[in-house]
Image (cartoon, rainbow, N blue to C red; front, side, top):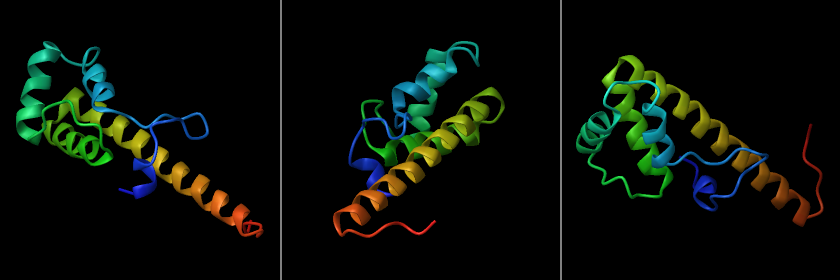
Length: 107
């Protein structure tokens, strides 16, 4: 993951970095007994559920994708959000650095 995505939890162009809470919440409408599934995912991923890093979210996504079915669909959606956030954060950082040296970004 890009280090840029670790710099802030604020939104980037209106998109907020997904969290483990988002991963857990996504299960509520997708699977029966989401609390049990969440506990299993935490065990499979080696996470506690309290981690705040992008790497922790990426680790959970991998566990969700490996589970298949509705859980994998939730993982896929979360992966799309994380990749979009990381890409937008990188672009925002590039624009900010370019502005500080007085250059215009190439179009």
